[in-house]
Image 1 (cartoon, rainbow, N blue to C red):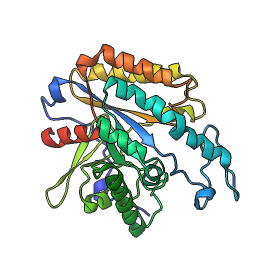
Image 2 (tube, rainbow, N blue to C red):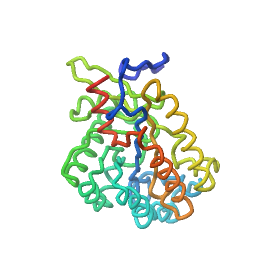
Image 3 (cartoon, rainbow, N blue to C red):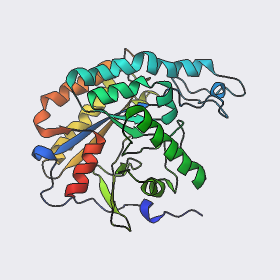
Image 4 (cartoon, rainbow, N blue to C red):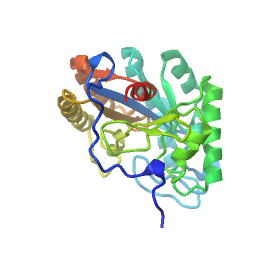
Amino acid sequence: MYSHPPELARRLQPSIPPAGLRWPGGKGLAISFVLNIEEGAELSLASGDERNEPVHEVIREINDVPDFCMQSHFDYGASAGYRRVVKRFIDGRLPLTLNVCGRALESTPWVSDDARQHGFEMSGHGWRWESPAHMDEATERAMIARTAATIERLSGRAPVGWHCKSTASVNTRRLLQEHGGFLYDSDFFGDDLPWVQTLADGRRHAVLPYAFDTNDMRFFDRAAFVSGADFASYVIDAINELRREAQDAPRMMTIGLHTRIMGRPARVGGLDAVLRHIDSCAKELWLARREDIARHWLAHA
């Protein structure tokens, strides 16, 4: 039977931030936009992988032969969706974190140019688009190192953050800390606030919550979101509730995006509506890259 390693111990107590803790400028709610860069990293027999990825605009696994339908749905994210989404952040000069799969960045190295030019953060998201849950320790250690080295080579800067697809393994957080250079991971869904793990050598590691509900992946989840307005309505409701709570204590919110999902013409208007709402209450909000959120929390929490 598996047990939780100390760094993955369950957190079943209410989170109570230090008294008086706020985000920069006295803001109550920190919002992190994350754009996942996975195109080219999806599992594909045509890429030499052991199977095909079954989830794209439909859920349908093709076995034993290449799935060119699935591949071209991922291709859409790189060829059209990426630019459509990123234009909103470039034009608005808004902070953005890119969750980058190493193999995807090899396929779309021009993403690194945007990151350098516009100050986007690049966080590690694995080599292929797969969970490390069943990886042996040596394989996962090598995967983390390969992904970090690729991001550093193509962007000029090593990642300081990490986020697995789905669940981390029992070793992930420890391997990130042993690798060195990682300030935080996002492999946690259990709160509306970060938390800090103090390591045996005195270093501190931030854990930033991620979210599957305020996330465009729900367009693929049994049609939970159908139109862009569905996405906008749900995300705006979350912002408004956290704004109210943040009058008393800080809160953090993640809005997850994918180039092949939000980048579709009928959906991106939902992102526009969210950005307009954020602009209307900007005095209460701190929009930030995840790296900046982690550094602030490590310094003040």
